[in-house]
Image (cartoon, rainbow, N blue to C red; front, side, top):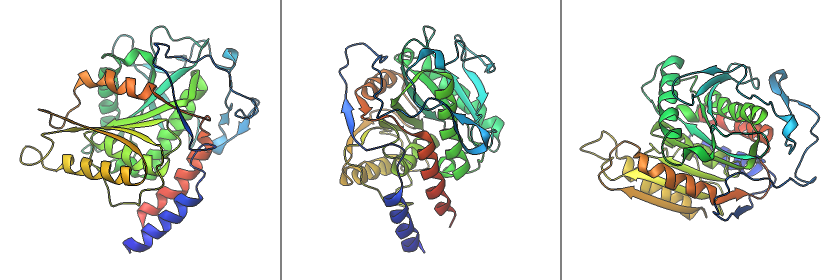
Length: 329
């Protein structure tokens, strides 16, 4: 059965449009400028009129005009804890029920483009959406108020279907994440050649899985202390895809119930074999946690990478929707 599943996944991954026009990537100079003012070319843009998407929501399409974005992107969202606060919203895409969390720097303005970090929360023991929401809010709030967080717009998806350490590999949760990205792109002036995916624990495993399903939708991947499902699907062609993988040297028995460090090493090797550019950092003295002194360095790594063409998130959603149901076999 597993060989049949792998064959189906190989065929699906080969035929998927993987969310953007190409897998080409570019490095950018770290000169302190974290927001891009470069206009997109006509060839990279779509009509900034409207495109009716699934669920009746509307994709505005890539645009470089400040007036196409709300002056107050937080209007209609719910402020949660912290200063400046994390906000909660519901995506207008998909079935209109996917929750997301978003944070933007105090100096956010629609007058320029901003890179976006998408965070997948942990919490494999969460049994309902409320617990997942609390986990996501606590994690995201801690990250954005730590060193390096002010350079980006941050978004966290919220698991809707839980009860599994592989929750981010479940179709509904992955689609909710993509729909959350689409909603944040509608509200905030995000540079969609510079969208990055990170996550911890269950979320780190989700980053790994989704990086093999949508390898060219994100500019770089940063899984942290993840539980890696290395045998659930074959690695696609990852030529040039950048990873920075953080693993705890103590995230292994007997101090932990799972050998996440061993799984991280295996995942790193599989990605390198598939052509990815991988940096594996094993953190001394760290178990199953995210040391906040690493956030700034992860963000610096992200800013060094961008896509040559903007991601088409509607196409990325279609790819995920086609591939993820195979996991249910």
